[in-house]
Length: 242
Image 1: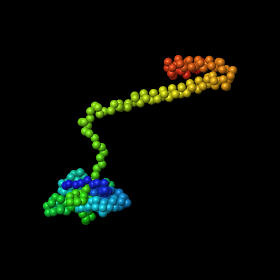
Image 2: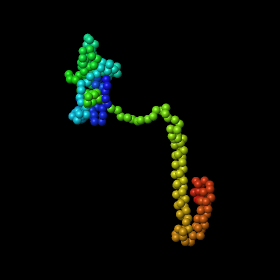
Image 3: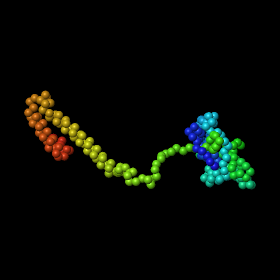
Image 4: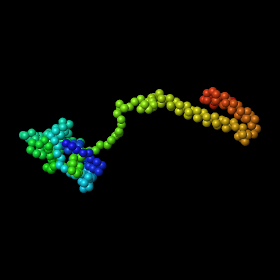
């Protein structure tokens, strides 16, 4: 059997149960929405009818082959397949996703034919078909997830030089971050100390101590110069001993 994919103007949902599996039923109660509230079914039934009114598709009787029925039975989609004395399939059952059971009857399209007309509640099951001279039943479309070359086409030059993040790398980066934080705190304390010993500011507050404080300030700057050639983390400790 040859079928076609639905296009974006076909809003009906396909079926995932029963002999109508993979087809888009005009009655959306036979689609994958079978267990949904009536409000949802009405919405999609209206969408299907609009599609038919606009001639984006047409409705046809659902006809499937004996091989198709046997495949559905093998997959557990249909069951209790009954046959008459001549071996023709006459009846089968199926369940929705919520285990609601339904019964379908089948009639051979011609005497001895392996193509069957599918009926539900005494009437042929209608499905959507393409329009034009080459009419084919429609099935669900599919959305492309990605387009990628074969894995065999990848080489060493295709791999980005980005190492996997290990626990040791995270710990190392956290250590750097914490050190920066500590250094920033030390720098802030140092700035406060230098500000408190600045001769210009001291003169305004304590004119009589300007000479002593000026000497302390110069000593502090000298120590900073020495400390810059040593470990920066010891700077504040040295200043406290002036």
